[in-house]
Length: 361
Image (cartoon, rainbow, N blue to C red; front, side, top):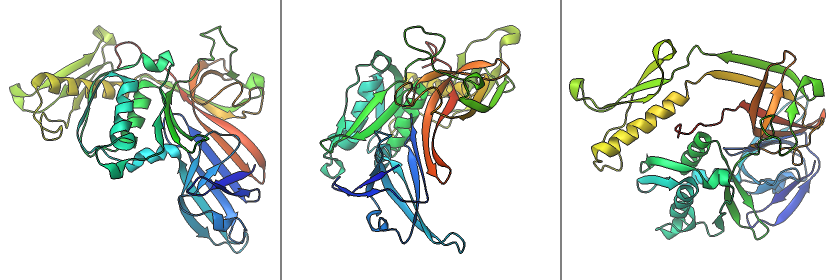
């Protein structure tokens, strides 16, 4: 696999076709990353400098060189290890300069965050001239709405976008277009399981020789369906809220102590109703961490039967089965491309998937 190097003006300056090993990982709701091991005597090493970019034909993403180290080995020789993250990591370069309250449409809320911190910020020095927001027309994106959600001054923009996307089970991407502009977009994966019939299924199973060393685990040990959250105050005056549902033997309760106080949003005192909304949001998020556990993964080879970029993509919901007839729906959360002395491999990574029910937001 060839690796194209771009300088900080986005001009191609080298095409690397010789190296020890290379791993490239794209992710659904987070920045991807890469690692390139190359001889210190390589003619390509002078082009691999901090903040230059890498691209490959198997991905639309672009990586940013962030770390360079030299490893000495008497047996294998001296090698440079070049690592970095994909362009989604650009969001990690900004924090909220003021408190934010997000309500209404998810897409518009995320657009507002990017506009305030990258596209059209009040301080010109924070602006990235070639950063754009791409409007989604996918109903799985446009139909999503926030409950009132508050973010404090100083919170990291990347962490905020990741938490939003993971909570609402959507992905985000930043690509470099033909005009050398960074395009941010929200997207959702396609359902390719037995629960739909409009497009072909994608099934990873030992029966199809595309799943091996699978692991299945399910547990209700830590499952909870009621969260009693405690806020500021003490004794009878302590603010609290209860979320969830469950009756009799089926009711499984937990308690959470919130660190939020009614004056921690940019130092401004919020109303009792607003503060209660903050507690309810926190309680729901904690409750989601204690659902029935289902882990279903395995080592796969994406070159067998189904081809990445044609039959499935990152974020897609696919079917997975093991030899004991356990079956489940999983989301493809990352795609790893690996090249070394053993050859070229493409492996998807799965996470168990449970569609967010109405009212879980």
